[in-house]
Image: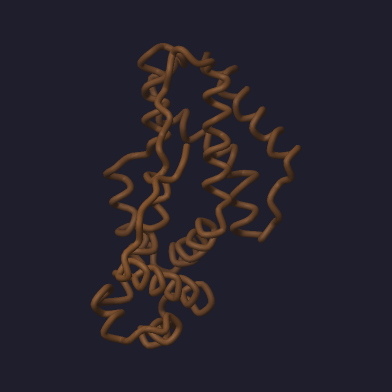
Length: 204
């Protein structure tokens, strides 16, 4: 699975710079303590430019959440195939999830959102509504696998949750909460094998 290429305009670059500045400020000072002036200064753009893109801190926060969630949808998904070994496809899915969850940008955005979920749960809930409407590409893969009889379940969304939960237990939550180092190559291989075998043993 690969990220789709997109040519950035000058406006896109300024918008990204503002988002980066907001994300750094929210992470270091917190959402409530950060002002739009702080973000303007850090982004090295005019206040007018900031407000043209983002009328408020809330819209900035929503944009950061949307940027993180966009990573889920900018990978070109590999559709489920009955012609490819289920084990191979599951290994590919594990690799994709690990690559996504361990991206520096993804972790940084997750830290901002995680912190604000404690102080401003409604703010996070509103920002996450778009993701819930679109649905997860990973859930769609498991739905297709179930429809074609490759896995046995009436609840593919639960299988997807289990699949991701194992990966996150080693390659996301420790890094997010404890600043733990990423597992090395051998450990990542063991995590992948464990995750794949869990699905195969429980659902085939």
